[in-house]
Amino acid sequence: MGAGHAHALYVHEHSPVHRLAPEVKLAAAFAFVLAVAVTPREAMWAFAIDATALAVVLRLARLPVGFVLARLAVILPFIAFAFLIPFVGSGDRVDVLGVSVSQPGLWGAWNVIAKATLGATVSILLAATTEIPSILRGMARLRVPETLTAIATFMVRYLELIAGDLRRMRTAMTARGYDPRWLWQARPIATSAGALFIRSYERGERVHAAMLSRGYTGTMPSLDRRAATIREWLVAGTVPGVAVATAVAAFLAPA
Amino acid sequence: MSHPAVEIRGVRFAYPDGRKALLGVDLRIEHGQRVALLGPNGAGKTTLALHLNGIHDADAGSIQIGQLPVTDANLPEIRRRVGLVFQDPDDQLFMPTVHEDVAFGPANLGLRGEKLDARVAEALDAVGATDVAGRAPHHLSGGEQRRVALATVLAMRPDLLVLDEPTSGLDPAGRRELVDVLRALPITQLVITHDLPFALELCERAVIMNDGRATADGATADLLADQGLLHANRLELPFGFDPTVARRDDRPASPRRAD
Image (cartoon, rainbow over all chains, first blue to last red; front, side, top):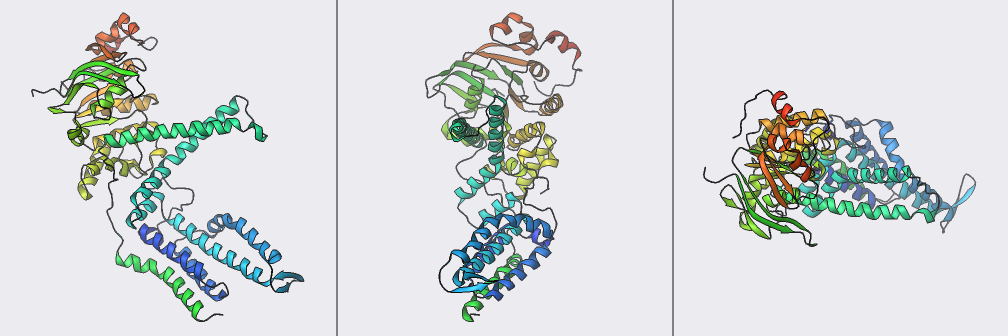
């Protein structure tokens, strides 16, 4: 399928990672995150291996480093919170640069930062190499319940439309001198949210009529053409495979 | 053929809230005809359209598409035969990509794989939208959206095309392209519109609805030339537009595929 409908997180490229079947990438990303999440935090070397594996894939996907780092900013609030833990945590104290901090707190902070960074990076990688329609197809092939994929499909399609409705309503309010500064001026916003809900509900009814008109009988037709090959599963499986092996090794031989 | 493309007899309908929308409509459309359905807002035009493929169930009267009556048992085939293009393309186009959207109807008919792809390609080609197949519907221009919406029903190879306000929101160039596409389609068409020049250009016959009834039926040029009739039905020609002149001069005598 052609380009031109990419979302903000997508990077248009023709890398081997982009070409992988979406269900394979979804499953691999999910497995990787799980493996990282259960890796014991004391095994610092394990996270280094996970990070290296991920870096190799990022390189293969030809994602610009700056792009990935900029997107990683979403985890900054968590990191800020993580930085607090050593100061407020209890337990044994250790001196770091002359400041007394909690040792379990330090481990807690490291745990949050390492796992959040790896998890966020793998999500960025998935989003940057897979367009939304493909992700939805991938979910369908992974046997995610059809109702859920259908809801996600409609959400993707209509989110921009509803956001556009909201923008126009706001513009219309502003044009008539509405300039909210205080909480007690929030009433029009609440009212417009209600109006938006009604509008969206009515649109839902019209869309349903349009679907019925084209022979909809209650189940979305599956438009699958190509299922992932064994080879794709094996290739994509290497990264979560490394992460799982690392996690197991970390459990067996604690650092 | 003994059966007309559409036969509507005495159809009456009231909405659940009690508002009476159709008060006994009779209409017969022959195969290959293009008929404009004119009338003011609230006349019941869209309500009537939603009866043609069984979205609404008539309270009284009957509708027949070809020799097939619109009944619950016949709904799958009725919905294959009647291609309904909704007024707002955002209602019509609900899938993430144009290709998937056009494939939705024929896939519901059971087509898969190469047959399905061929059907999608055929429909997109008919409306000149092949190059947007991979795009998302909300990234298309208004004219493209309208033509793709048309393709989504053409992909079901309908016998009857029902278009609800196809020119609303289109710029003049988009409108022109739509006229060309519709004129090239050898399918019976019922076109609901407020755009009287558009009706005149596209349809040899027009039916006027008002207050839930068909109030006039005849050659589009004759109806539009009747100021009293238009006035009585809250219809107005654009300023400076003379249907008698437009008829003679605007269109070269292009071959009519229909009739």
